[in-house]
Image (cartoon, rainbow over all chains, first blue to last red; front, side, top):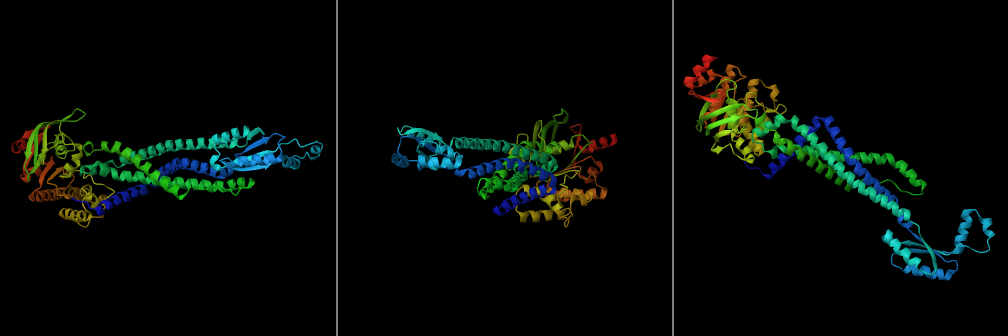
Length: 310
Length: 230
């Protein structure tokens, strides 16, 4: 008995169609299993999309990471300009803006409402300030600390204030969230494998007579296992699709509220859904997990089904 | 073709189904395996089809000892033995064609070969044209013939049948036996287990009589004894 490549592919196509037929003949059981898998896969995907959206929304936070170097009140404006030029020449520094004492006082006068009180002052108590923003590639906590120490060593500088410490903390929270996401994805992946494994176990029990007859006429374990592997893979594929739909639907539901929030900050930020690459990855992972779950169940339970014991 | 040498079979429950059974079936021979229900006939068939392995002794089928045959070679072994069951063991949700084609599908035959052989097997059992019918739509006799078609479709050199006429009326039973005779005439070794002594006597073929898990003796002397006890 020889099997050509066309017949081989047809045989696999038959197994696939047969598996799809089995799923279609039990629609409620199939929908519930797919839904459970979809929700399990949707959680890590949703978290990933959330983290990416938050990162996207806060991408211009790199501008919020800045240093303010307060010069001694005795430092003149021309000297302050020289210092600004020196700071600008340092590698990793993006922009350096000199806020003169006069500019600072004028700004304070308009924003504070203490105009009349300020008129009573004999001189300007405010210092010249260098507002320094690092390049986005040089905004790590270590880079910022290095820059702070460099500026603090200047005799003209009275103090240096790091303005973006909260951004570093925020990024640390996002990193923690991302690591939690990986952990959740791994745990939920195990859950998906278990769900498919249990479903296939029940399927094997239900089709015991068919398996016995197939083995009786000389069917190998591999042959008997084939449709179950396709069933598991289909569960995974459909579960991945369900997860994508759940996340898309959730984002659509959240989009108006997110847009409203962004608008209140004067931003045009809109929630971004999973990309086509995300969908491909999700379907691939879902299929793989489904296949793995069914393989484990089939390997364990099919060996126990033997026509001799019937 | 089939040799049992001092074969014993004890099930996990502790029940000893066979004890010191020895017999030989020559290639191309057709024999009956007879005895009362529970005598051990089905166990003998299971040992031939490698659905069970002997606890002691040797079972050699088609030149291959079954006692220590590696598990990976069992499927190929089973493809060389066609099995007909009293309860047919058909897949109720598959049409006749799919049921009969199963041994060819598991053997990875080409689709063209499957179509040709299934139709030939159905023609042999008189069911050509019933390919798309579900087993439940057939009579008991027709279902039995589907089971026989499945057993012979891959043209195995050995055919074993467990009470193949048990659920059939005399006319259908005679038809099934005639079919076995025709297969035997073209060289298939046939072993039929039955408790129908009338069928055995009428056939004029050799019978191996089993009583309480042992070979009871030559049929000419033993059959009247069994009949007398009934």
